[in-house]
Length: 328
Length: 198
Image (cartoon, rainbow over all chains, first blue to last red; front, side):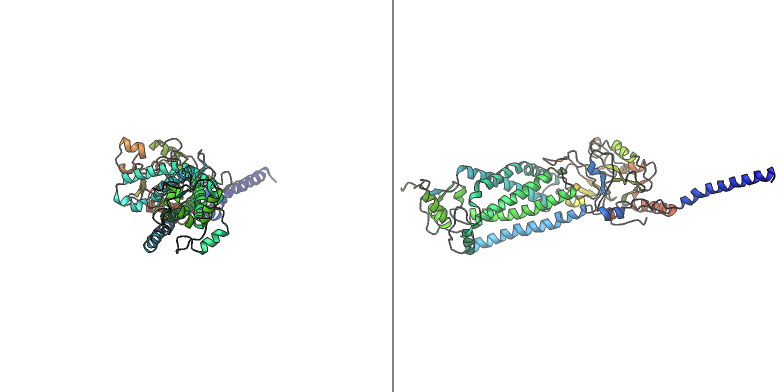
């Protein structure tokens, strides 16, 4: 082998090596870099949302897409409105029909002129504090759901925003006395509100309002116990979900906040419907009932007809709480 | 009229955050509020992708639907805007938004979260005039000056596209056809109920 052929051989090897070196990246270029890359559809199918790393202090911003968030809209705009409208208007219509057919439930024996203390000043204060808060909370809450459909068309957008803004402040601030009221109601009246056999009998006989019967009852009858538990459990539900909504993203995600709003809205609507019935019986539905929360003193005959067993207890105590009013 | 849209070509995004910076600077967006952000998915792993996301200006926008005071409106260009004078800061638009676009001065909802702020597609607020008062509330109205959103204009790799939906979709399709791949128009299915073949 001559030097010439040796050089040729070496050059040939270099040429092949170079050719291989150039061909290899060219082949790699035809590989689809997309093959490994994340894809929107796959991510959404796996997690229902797309999150990643971002450099913002607000880490909720690192989630860029949650298609399911759009679904809550249907609840807020359609489902909740139907639930609230049917339950609240339904109870209102039922009460009007009931009043027109049954009228006010009178004290059958007439007023005796003697009274007995039913609720003391503390009890009445707690009741009216909770009741006042409830009415303002209910109206400001209904405004969030129905305001733009019912109020906005009859006023300027600026006026409606002002009302809604103030409604929101009231809704937030009055939640505190309302919650305290619910807790006090729970503690104050738990003793008389444990369901027992008397309530079964009371319910079987239609209470004091359906029909003309007067089934015996202790301090709280079956219907009042129902109202008590609606207030305690419903109040707890709206308070807990309400505070979640008031302080969002402390331990909850957007999904959690949406769920809190769903529970808050449904429970509040049913709560309002139930309270309409409570307000009816406590005012125009029954003679002598308002005094229990008004002056705190109820007529003995009223007590005899609606809370016979309680009256017997009170009389038996021998305390002179049942006091005679001046005859003339 | 054009139907304005955003499109982020994730195969081009290099996570430089120029869009975020451009937006903050152009509109003097307050500290803590981000109208646009860049998120990196599967960061550090093979196949990672970065996506720049802001308000997508949805068709039939859910924020507008759930707003209890109807402060949202859609312009003739399909841009979803809102009035800060009417907003009561309830936070509902954020709960309904699939893209996390609405931003608030405060996290807590006690009292008020403050007036909601979000991407305006550089189209200002209800009053299109570029006055100092409007600027303080909404930022610049670049659309009124015949300019497109600054985030897309400043994108160094032209990953972020903003403009007439038909035109940016066409540009994206051409790119996909030429290079042979594309991870799709992120968020389009959710925002506009349509997809561009990737």
